[in-house]
Length: 118
Image (cartoon, rainbow, N blue to C red; front, side):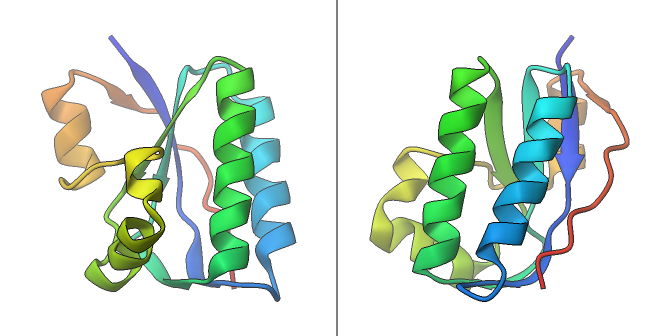
Protein backbone atom coordinates (compact mmCIF):
# COMPACT_ATOMS: atom_id res chain seq x y z
CA UNK A 1 0.00 0.00 0.00
CA UNK A 2 1.30 3.44 -0.93
CA UNK A 3 1.06 6.24 1.61
CA UNK A 4 0.79 9.65 0.02
CA UNK A 5 1.15 13.04 1.65
CA UNK A 6 -1.02 15.77 0.11
CA UNK A 7 -0.24 19.50 -0.08
CA UNK A 8 -2.70 22.06 -1.42
CA UNK A 9 -1.16 25.34 -2.61
CA UNK A 10 -3.58 28.16 -3.44
CA UNK A 11 -3.61 31.15 -5.76
CA UNK A 12 -0.82 32.35 -8.01
CA UNK A 13 2.73 30.99 -7.89
CA UNK A 14 4.97 33.66 -9.35
CA UNK A 15 8.12 35.70 -8.74
CA UNK A 16 6.47 37.39 -5.75
CA UNK A 17 6.02 34.20 -3.72
CA UNK A 18 7.92 31.36 -5.40
CA UNK A 19 10.59 31.31 -2.70
CA UNK A 20 7.97 30.93 0.05
CA UNK A 21 6.17 28.25 -2.01
CA UNK A 22 9.45 26.39 -2.53
CA UNK A 23 10.50 26.74 1.11
CA UNK A 24 7.17 25.42 2.41
CA UNK A 25 7.05 22.47 0.01
CA UNK A 26 10.69 21.55 0.68
CA UNK A 27 10.00 21.67 4.40
CA UNK A 28 6.99 19.44 3.86
CA UNK A 29 9.04 16.93 1.83
CA UNK A 30 11.78 16.94 4.49
CA UNK A 31 9.27 16.29 7.27
CA UNK A 32 7.34 13.47 5.64
CA UNK A 33 8.48 9.89 5.93
CA UNK A 34 6.20 8.82 3.10
CA UNK A 35 7.60 7.94 -0.31
CA UNK A 36 4.90 9.70 -2.33
CA UNK A 37 4.26 13.44 -2.02
CA UNK A 38 1.10 14.74 -3.70
CA UNK A 39 0.47 18.37 -4.56
CA UNK A 40 -3.20 19.14 -5.22
CA UNK A 41 -3.19 22.06 -7.67
CA UNK A 42 -6.96 22.57 -7.61
CA UNK A 43 -6.57 26.00 -5.99
CA UNK A 44 -3.65 27.16 -8.17
CA UNK A 45 -4.73 29.77 -10.70
CA UNK A 46 -1.43 30.51 -12.44
CA UNK A 47 2.25 29.52 -12.41
CA UNK A 48 4.92 31.71 -14.03
CA UNK A 49 8.49 30.75 -14.95
CA UNK A 50 9.69 31.41 -11.38
CA UNK A 51 7.07 28.99 -10.09
CA UNK A 52 8.16 26.39 -12.65
CA UNK A 53 11.78 26.73 -11.54
CA UNK A 54 10.67 26.31 -7.92
CA UNK A 55 8.79 23.13 -8.88
CA UNK A 56 11.88 21.76 -10.64
CA UNK A 57 13.94 22.38 -7.49
CA UNK A 58 11.24 20.74 -5.37
CA UNK A 59 11.15 17.77 -7.76
CA UNK A 60 14.95 17.44 -7.61
CA UNK A 61 14.96 17.48 -3.81
CA UNK A 62 12.20 14.87 -3.68
CA UNK A 63 14.24 12.63 -5.99
CA UNK A 64 17.36 13.16 -3.84
CA UNK A 65 15.36 11.89 -0.89
CA UNK A 66 14.05 8.98 -3.00
CA UNK A 67 10.51 10.34 -2.93
CA UNK A 68 7.98 10.78 -5.71
CA UNK A 69 6.28 14.08 -6.48
CA UNK A 70 2.85 14.09 -8.14
CA UNK A 71 0.54 16.93 -9.15
CA UNK A 72 -3.24 16.44 -9.31
CA UNK A 73 -6.18 18.63 -10.27
CA UNK A 74 -4.08 20.86 -12.52
CA UNK A 75 -6.36 23.32 -14.33
CA UNK A 76 -6.27 23.35 -18.15
CA UNK A 77 -4.56 26.76 -18.25
CA UNK A 78 -1.86 25.76 -15.75
CA UNK A 79 -1.44 22.37 -17.44
CA UNK A 80 -0.80 24.19 -20.73
CA UNK A 81 2.12 26.00 -19.07
CA UNK A 82 3.54 22.63 -18.01
CA UNK A 83 3.06 21.24 -21.51
CA UNK A 84 4.68 24.22 -23.24
CA UNK A 85 7.67 24.00 -20.91
CA UNK A 86 7.61 20.16 -21.27
CA UNK A 87 7.68 19.81 -17.47
CA UNK A 88 4.67 17.54 -17.80
CA UNK A 89 7.18 14.96 -19.09
CA UNK A 90 9.29 15.28 -15.92
CA UNK A 91 6.90 15.95 -13.06
CA UNK A 92 4.14 13.39 -12.57
CA UNK A 93 0.85 15.06 -13.45
CA UNK A 94 -2.26 12.96 -12.93
CA UNK A 95 -5.55 13.61 -14.72
CA UNK A 96 -7.89 12.15 -12.13
CA UNK A 97 -8.83 13.75 -8.85
CA UNK A 98 -6.24 12.56 -6.34
CA UNK A 99 -8.85 10.97 -4.08
CA UNK A 100 -10.06 8.81 -6.96
CA UNK A 101 -6.46 7.96 -7.83
CA UNK A 102 -5.67 7.09 -4.22
CA UNK A 103 -8.68 4.81 -4.05
CA UNK A 104 -7.71 3.07 -7.28
CA UNK A 105 -4.13 2.70 -6.02
CA UNK A 106 -5.41 1.38 -2.65
CA UNK A 107 -3.53 4.24 -0.98
CA UNK A 108 -4.30 6.43 1.99
CA UNK A 109 -4.62 10.18 2.49
CA UNK A 110 -2.22 11.08 5.26
CA UNK A 111 -4.03 14.34 5.97
CA UNK A 112 -1.18 16.67 5.13
CA UNK A 113 -1.55 20.40 5.73
CA UNK A 114 -2.16 22.88 2.95
CA UNK A 115 0.53 25.24 1.64
CA UNK A 116 -0.72 28.72 0.72
CA UNK A 117 1.04 30.04 -2.39
CA UNK A 118 -0.51 33.47 -2.67
